[in-house]
Image (cartoon, rainbow, N blue to C red; front, side, top):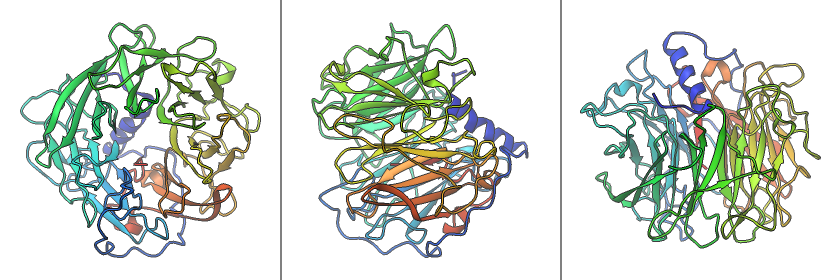
Length: 504
């Protein structure tokens, strides 16, 4: 049986609890009344694709959009989780509940248990077929009936009216998996200018489906990647980005060691036209291996090399080292060979100077990550969730921290915090809310700064809710933030874990 990351163990266990009729998490409160407009029919067909072509612009109007997964949405089978995906469309006024799409998983042939496909568990966006519109790729829980091994991916295709209602099934990806518990990411890893899909196998590697991907569900070719010969037994999280600064996407793999299930490592595989180079381990300043529950890549200091950001939201004991107590962020600055030789890697947690709060066991800082320029200064910033944070004695209320990028890298200076206790944020902090379990950053209004979307799938007895935060010249602000749940936009209701996954 595949080894699962803590994040996926939680999601799967939650799904099992719901199937059994149990409450998956302590009762939260209903989604706060939103100042956003009431749900309306989808927006009219938009104009031709913009020359900017954002990787998450599904309708080609030049504004990024965000897809919101609800993998436990029930459609037909009361004991299943067919899943659903809602799309909030960007525009001059940013995101709202008014401009949206709702996509549900049909009862279709070729998949065992289609009512338990968990559509919306794992979502990524990119222009896979080269037509100028971003497409949505997701990894399904279900698998084919003919006994094929490997992962099943589904693609909803972008176009002038947004995403296609029907998803195209890609044939099972090579590998020995029969479920959808692994990770995936998208990016150009072979330098041909076309997005590729990297799929982890929850073993010692995975495969790349090289684009373009046709609307009949075929890719141009498939190649394997591996961490054989390293200290990784099972891969958990992956990310694609240009760490070495050569214009080609590299692959970062987080994984577990063979001797201890919580022994963690991270490896960089440099991308290129002839395939990946041998894996190089990413280590902290003390020479120790690192790992975590989330990973992203962005050039935080704008030196031309992507920086690896790892969220270590999987603290396992109160005896953990001080730098990682309560969870933490690990930042490895990029360089031509992977890690920078001029700027050392750093750990940041709530005991770091300038960061609000105190590092405590079970805060789970780093459980979720999003990277983007929130204040328009040209440097990407880091948003991270702490869904286990205790607020004024309220267990698992959760919060989000935002850290600023800059020419000297990232520190705690100038960081911001947000939660349902923050003035201007709808709702109230309650036990089990786990605010910040999912995050996205995107310039949804085209103003040059990335707004923040916060997902809280356990809100209101796992019905879920999301929050949209605006920006000003200082970055993310609480003033004007709005919140709503699935019912507001006409998505399937019930304990669907609405907002468990976000693109961005």
